[in-house]
Image 1 (cartoon, helix red, strand yellow):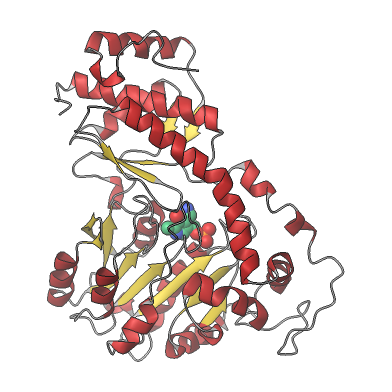
Image 2 (cartoon, rainbow, N blue to C red):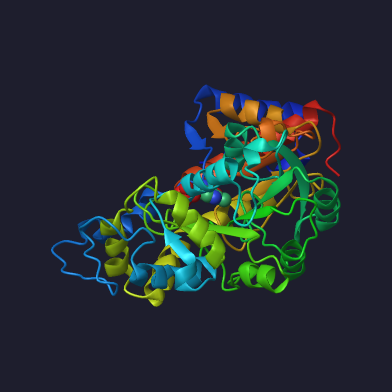
Length: 428
Ligand code: PMP
């Protein structure tokens, strides 16, 4: 299907009247396309069908003598920690805890301990601070902002550059304000830009002088192995750099297998310094006798070894890469000659970030919705859902089949061009 039927020129050259005519045609039979979130597609979920038949009748006694069927093993089966600790967290096995299925839940939990008890070697619970604050690189991930909202943490936006968060601003803020207790970081193939922090950014984050002695980086490595090209970015050694800088306890690393096997049956990981791990397990012990080791064993049997994880991620790439290519092709064709619209070209992860002239994002999302395309709401990539420039939209190509994605991208292009025309914004 094509939105720009009978259009002989590039869509960017259409007049407002012509764009309105194209838009009116889409309203005759509105689409019903949902592109709001980065869900794996059903083909991706099907890659894990065999996973659902495990562990079957497997007989397995863990290296530490734990019978996986029973209570216990709070830190997680050592064999399963060994399978994922280096690959997902860049840490040795004993510096990793396996929890339940969601890393977001673990972030929420770690914050809860910091609020109630304070972080290791510090006595002041964060709940005692009048206005605890977190730095939030923007555009960023709405569910991180939701966690801050839940704890009434004030969010301080920091602009994202191609190299990661603007470190000059970060350094200035954390040095001046002891109530800045933490910072959200999605260091690799981040949500929504798809970019990766540069080695210099990571080094500066590890060695930041901060006014708060209990400042923590919430290092969400959600896309550790989610490559889309042969230029596979390796894990940044954040824990090692923090330790070398004298801040061994500065970082909490999170990851999960949600987008490796199944979002509803993954494993979530917490990785940190030995003191942080002891702290986390000490508090976690009051919460559970042990996590779901049946699911841990299922992961071990399904993947076998680290190579098994790599091979499985290649299958995801085969399904995802053509979708990112299709989106890229549609955007480059649709916005050819339109210099005021830019977007990211990620080498991994699940998202593309679209940047429009100031004041356009809400209108584009509105127009698209009327035409039957639900996009991530404008503002979602900013704390409080408010993008001060109203210019950013997160695009999530993973879930749709390629043809539907092509149609979605064309509707998007049309809605953007129409918005620029309505607002008399020059395309250059
Ligand atoms: N962090 C980021 C940056 C994400 O994009 C996502 C998934 N969209 C998550 C965390 C969710 O992780 P989990 O499924 O482990 O809770």
